[in-house]
Amino acid sequence: MKSRDTLIRLKRFHVDEKRRRVAQIEAMIAEFQRMATELDREIENEERRAGISDTAHFAYPTYAKAARTRRDNLLHSAGELNDQLEEAKAALNEAFEELKKVEILEDREKAAERAELALRDQIETDRIAARMRYAAGRL
Image (cartoon, rainbow, N blue to C red; front, side):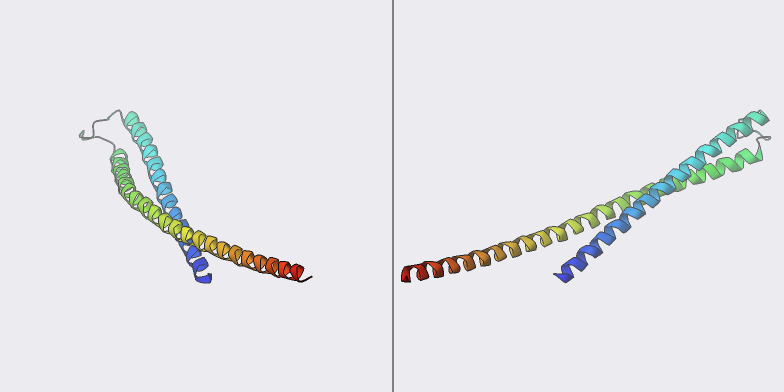
């Protein structure tokens, strides 16, 4: 029984670890998207200030070009993180299923132990009742 408890604790640890990983990736994606949105605002402000929004124009602001590149990189990274997020969610589901299997086995073992204990109690009760009937018959 001790090894089963240890196994369950280990499986729960794995599930918690996978949950933390999913949450971490989700937070990173949200942060990248927030930063990209902020860069979009800065690009718009810079273009408005310069009066040029055509990226091919020779006088297009250098800061706006750099901000666009950074924003595009952030969005690309967020896309890659989405792939990692799907993998992490699949790993979490797998770890959760493994935990459930072990917990079900433990529940079955405990139910079998309770049934065995109840049977022993019933046998002992029947034995005592038989002795009492025998003793009462002798009187």
